[in-house]
Amino acid sequence: MPDMPVSITNRQKSFKIDLNRIRRSLKRLLKELNYEDREISLLLVDDNQIREINKYYLNRDCPTNVISFAMTEGDFGHINPQILGDVVISVETTSRDALTAHIDLMEELEFLLIHGILHLLGYNHENTSAAKVEEMNKREQELFSLLRRYHLD
Image 1 (cartoon, rainbow, N blue to C red):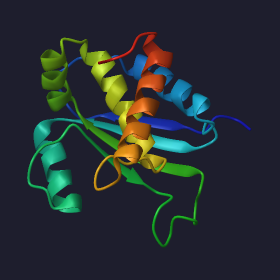
Image 2 (image 1 turned 90 degrees about the vertical axis):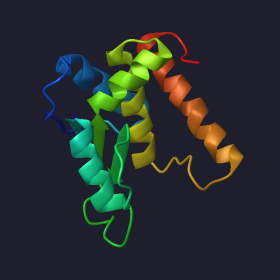
Image 3 (image 1 turned 135 degrees about the vertical axis):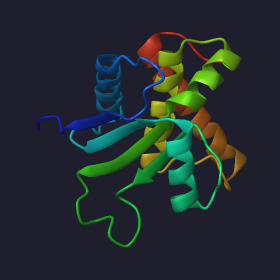
Image 4 (image 1 turned 60 degrees about the vertical axis):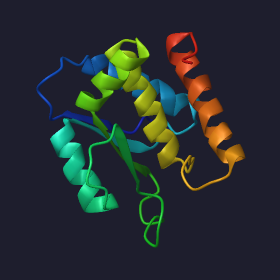
């Protein structure tokens, strides 16, 4: 089955992003997860934009690094199972996180992309057991290591 399209939109202007690298990483992650036949969209925004999204959809009036919207969940999740969903990343928050962690902005973006994709696939780290949190953390590390050939601590 052919690869489904990945849609990447960059709505922030403050940081130069290698969109080709992000596209390659996204496709590689979907292939590794056996979801290369699914459609996904990635939206890169600034803190103001993600704050609006966070407030409107999650009732949290603050910026965050990543938000995922799974299209396979809920009452109508069965309508088009080929669409995994949407991942929204604030590049502004990502930049601050990367500086704090002393890593490259693109690597932090890839890590958040992994995090967002895992949320689309049903992984969770909020309001769940320690075992589920550990399971998600372990999978994040495995996938990041696949992309970058080293582990983030």
